[in-house]
Image (cartoon, rainbow, N blue to C red; front, side):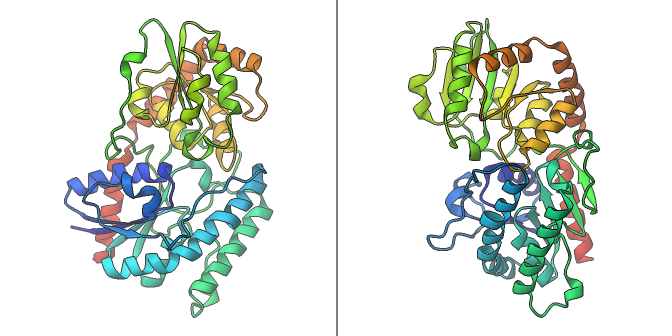
Length: 390
């Protein structure tokens, strides 16, 4: 049996696929441990999980949403979040690895500290990549800037390592990179970072905590829409939610489940249910369409259920994922910051009444459902662990 250490950032959307993978590995008898920020993610792990906390006193790492968008938001994401988190986490993950002595590490693509620790200690590791956008090259200027930031981080953490041993993108594993997406969504506009990839499709289902939901609220004589902006962007502001609620208020044969702050409940019309959290996978089985931020997990889960969507990207990789879904014919675009009630009504009507959207969503859904997901990821992890021990 293999000893496997997971190293993840404090983002629930990055934890969920690993919970599904971990469920497969646990069922096969492998020994698992988690290096995570327990303040944010600890409650989502199985009760008996072995955990090495990455919390550093009161300096709990959180995502600060920048006011800028596009490539500038990517730069700020590195400067204000990913790189500081790496500096803080390096000694803690190293201590976890020395204590647990894993055969293999599974490191989230954004948890660069895990990959550097694995390299320093000579541990085989795989990268977990939750979005197809992460493997695409950006602009040459931004790619060079990211490489420079990583070079500095490698020099500070491993000053005795020869400069020739440093790599431009240490966040990509030389062993294998687990991409929880399908190549059909990638498109051809951007080149990929050169690395060994396994395209697995989404890893969903097992391992997620149960969430209560009033299923009786959904009426059989209505069409149902899920409205979600993910776990990070949902509290950015409430205007978008308010516009969507106003648009749906005039649609008596439509019901919407809106995942957002409970404070919105007082403004919600009778055909909109506001919930802080929802059992998204189960809920999608009852939906006819989705309005979302183009987060990769949500896009894949939506398509797996043959559902068309409206994408309103906000930041980071979301514009790229949104464009992939639109180019694939399964999504319509909506401007997050400036959408009007009239435009929202028109777009929602098109979402629910354009057969071609459903056709293309079903086409992609068929590919996604055939993908190996968590089972395939677990098989790759065990294979790498066995190879490392041989």
